[in-house]
Length: 469
Image (tube, rainbow, N blue to C red):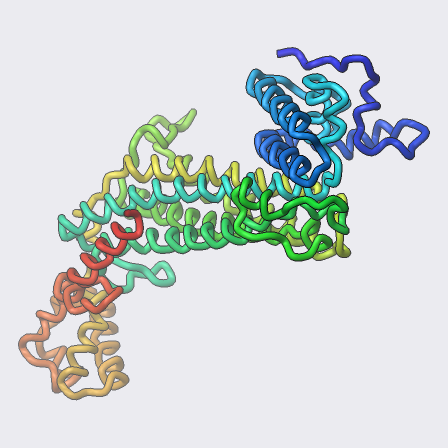
């Protein structure tokens, strides 16, 4: 697709700010200043807000009805050219300049009236907020897709009654329902969705009408703009409005936090998919092989998801470092807010479907999970056994520790130690002590809300279903 040519004017004439300059800007500055390679994707939102601005100018008596309608039709024509594949010219400093140039092509000099009373400062802030509101909704949908996969696996594992070791410090800790482990990755994502909804609400503050810094000199109805563009409130201060990028930082934090949660899920799956664990068997669609070792199956999608968290954290750090050094009002440093914003959201939208797909095709080896359970993992249950028979927990802890030491030194599993070893450790141990060494009994005893017991896990599954309904 070829670029559109300027009609009847030199490209420099289409700069929005050149009136007080007698010469051309340096090529090196133009190269540094040109942002259209990043902000080009804002064009649907800029056209949408520009159409609303045309109506607001008519409402304020700046334009006639005919002029306002011609501007709207002209902007529709510009949108059609974008959809047809129109690409920028070297003279297009940013997407706003490009739209202005194309609008002049469509309707002539009337296009020059559209920028009355507004600045690129409030214009770009509004377009970026509109884009971010859409991004929050799109990210929410992608997170929900992954949550559904997690929930489907949890339901299947719960129906099978699958048990597995849970780990602290990467050491076997206590037995849990495998569905409980799976849902441990569902709820962080639910918190991410809550943060997305909060970000969407805080983003829905309209800056349009703030001008460059002092507000608009024409009697524009900002309430009309708010309603037509779908914002929930008006910015209360024009100086703050053109420089406020809190909403970008909030979304970048949410995405970085989400990336951390995805990384943790990916790490669990990668680890449990090793031969040494064998809890997870990967599928074909989201893994790759080795160019040298024919037997390899590499969980590349999960590894890339794990690695991408660093990139999204970097985007957040870059923006926060930029914002902390700025005075009030608009500064050109803010031009890079979109580079970080778009990169983080784009990366998240690559990672989320890949993780959902990789997880969906995983097979869980519940036999390997069960085989990884050992009687030493019921040490806490032994201590609880003594507590229920009148011992203090510290006393019980020491007695069970003695049994664990004997088990390790003799090479005999805890459940295989003779009964006399238990009575030697504490006189309150009775013949029923071996029942406390059952993984299933251990899980069943922990049936309070939020725990790993059968009723508690069923309640979690019901709550997860409700969260997605």
